[in-house]
Figure 1 (cartoon, helix red, strand yellow):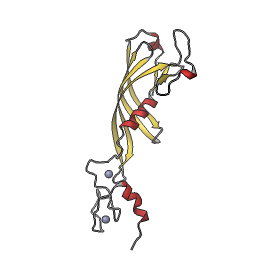
Figure 2 (cartoon, helix red, strand yellow):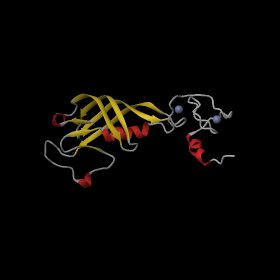
Figure 3 (tube, protein in one colour):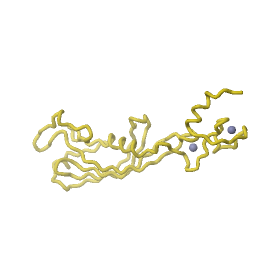
Figure 4 (tube, helix red, strand yellow):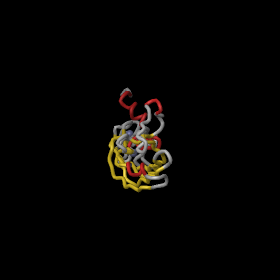
Length: 174
Ligand SMILES: [Zn+2]
Ligand SMILES: [Zn+2]
């Protein structure tokens, strides 16, 4: 998700640029391919560029209850200031020791890459226990049947969590 911002960086503060986003990228922490769409407003500040992004992240997730894959869609509202590594007007570079890890930076080729911020926001906003449906029935704790699909044959119909499903193979059969 690269934006060329050289022109904006040279302009005076308050100048704006609206960009549309329609991109795919791999989310580092989940190794999932994620599709992002929406709009990004770039605003020149005194020291850098303020990013105000209204995005939607779409990806394939695994239901924590029935373990089936489903399409997840999460809104990402990104508000961050980006600082240039290279000052276009003075030619000055930010020294390595001046770089603050929590900050976002505009690369020296004057490209603002939104992927890292999108990935961070996504990790904060992804539900910990995601579900395919609000009322997903999960798996039967005894026989492992997906109770969304059918009634189970074991007669217990005990609703399950992911943890119980993981323990399933370790149960001793009678
Ligand atoms: Zn489910
Ligand atoms: Zn069962």
